[in-house]
Length: 338
Image (cartoon, rainbow, N blue to C red; front, top):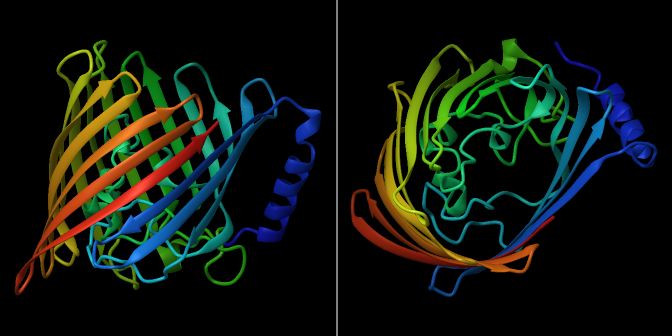
């Protein structure tokens, strides 16, 4: 089944044109980043997100978020499988990473329906989202195995969230493949379980009063283009608060499918908050079909007032293939968020 993308786009434009007639929330997030591999290769990466929420009634609203990506070098400057920068993507002038209706059923239950991606809801806790390597976003046991609604792709789907004190449960059902175009086969709007399969994900988490958080989840999606085989990935991670300013993080992910590209992921690290400066160290191991990777990141995030920040990061990557090799990379990131 395919919805009429022209009608959907018309509805979105009508909502945007009527922003001034209703109360709305608008936000802008911009990131610019200079990358180097210390071998003479550099890349300049940029990302812009504009999001807004428009109330339609007392408990129903419409959410949308645009995504634009610009890079100066199409080829990645480092051939690592985990992506030392979570900005890595192809040049993308404009797409929608989110365009959905939000229904707040009551104080505990919320449902979203429309275009969405899993980066809005999963692996976005405070400590894991501090680091800039992609494996601290979506674990590679998910991102390397499945063509799903993961940055820079989105798809049509349903997302449900239940919250009660420190406990949160969420579940999502997406079209089995993610896209980021407005026309052609790669447009955002299809719901095609026969050709794309179905992607399902769920997670439960608990946050203690002292700030420690614990997460456990699972997902299933098609492993091949014929969608005859589905994989099953599970994960668990914790962000343990050791003192007022010190957090420890430990991650584990596993995919049970024999044909999966990445079967195991383990990571450990920590972050310390020093007034307007955050400093973090994270190291991980990922087991892929034909090689293993150890990746270590040390990063510092400096607040430059209310809306700006500056974040340098250094990466040391060990690749065990037919021959063992070491690689280094670094980036300097400037961010703006309102």
